Amino acid sequence: GTLMGIGRMVQGAHFASDVIWSGGMVYLSALGIYYALGMDRRILYDSEDMMDRKKKTFVTAVLGLLAAGLDRLGDNPNQASSLLREALDLRRGAPYGDVDGLGVFQAEVARLSEMRFTALEARIEAELACGRHREVMAELEALVAKHPLRERLWGALMLALYRTGRQADALAAYQQLRTVLGEQLGIDPSSELRDLEERILLHDPSLDLVIP
Image (cartoon, rainbow, N blue to C red; front, side, top):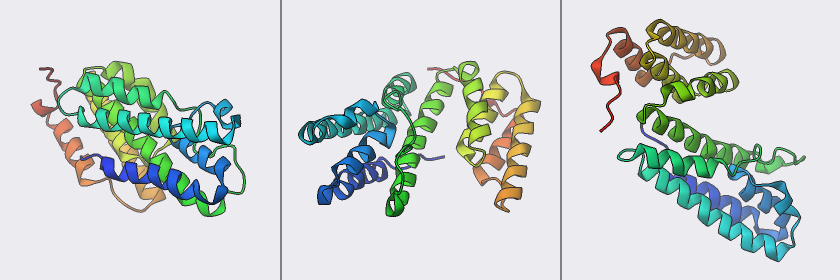
């Protein structure tokens, strides 16, 4: 499937820096930016001027890494993986994870979390395109256990299982997702996941790894 547009991620980061930063709310806006992918909390105790300079540098760097990683996903997955991993390695916790009383900022928390998930899912997709299905298996199993409604993660897990010769487990993963979605949301998996299940059943050659 298609990735969330980079423009939407940029808008999310700009919301955090321009809107939350306004009105003198420096502490919250610094958290918004640094927790978008996460930054060492020690940075939050610098002076306001220092935070402002570091904030601008950080936002530029992170957005540059994300944009470059997503741009290279199709033709250079190895480089995409490195760029996206570098961005994600800045993370040190969930957005606003240790701040109470956020109130109206909850929508932005969700937006920043979604931005990070987009980068994470793209990085895993790049790893699979590089043939690292065995290396990401444990990570994917942990992620779907923690975030059972993320269909993109389930699709990556199904593909990784299939490419390691575990067709039955890949199909079982689809059934597990179907159960979770049915019980929690009353819906079926997306057409993309249904198509993947059918291709796994048929041993579709297009699922085999092809490294240029």
